[in-house]
Image (cartoon, rainbow, N blue to C red; front, top):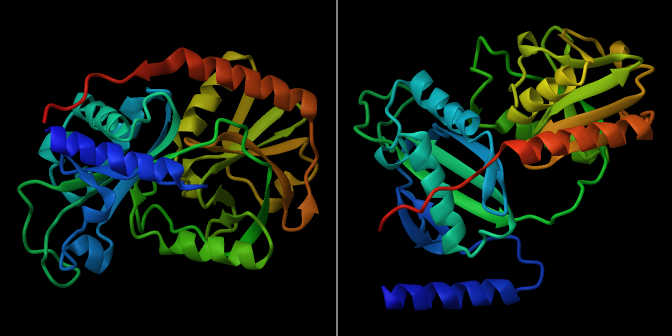
Length: 318
């Protein structure tokens, strides 16, 4: 035990002295704390061969998290769609929080702002798209990275030539590891000198950005695409809708075209790690900036966020 602690201390010291380091040296693999460089997977596993897995990301605010039930529920949805069991050490929301606590303590990040990603996969090695066996237990990996405690920068969006994969083809409420359509959309946005891509549905309705849901204010209305537009219904999106509704504002969830963004007083994105952040342009056209409303919006959102943060339980027992 002392040897492991000394090894962890040395790795953390090395990481902390690397200028601009954006990784933590320890991960939790199948319930065990291991060095990230040793957390390999078998290349015959279906995660490596076919991208058969799912994940979720969230933010730790100095050892507290928002809506852990929502984040854990998303992971359970992936297992349910594939008809496989959750990992034994990640089978309950309490175990999920214990994994996060263990990860943060291993990296001495309990007092920090941290990005956390939990990935689950079957571990099967069956060749071909049709897996002929059901695993007794899935595998999981939890990784973390430090975040700066500052407001995210405004972003520009490019309208993607790629459409959002429809829910009827791939369940939209799960973050699947096979995210090639997002990767291609993000690369296209970069080529267009934009920060992110705005995807439309196959029918031409507004859907989402590659990592965020979109909202805009137009007069007294707050608008956002609904779930019929193949969006991943984000946890921060859900939280913000509740905040806006409780503040007496009307939130119009529906199907919208690009023309519905014209004349918007403010456009912004929501993401569980970044929170709320404004959009400064879409397709090269500048967006309006209602600073007074933005400041009020952020204040109400942050007040609600602080009120619903939950502390993490004791870590897993070795």
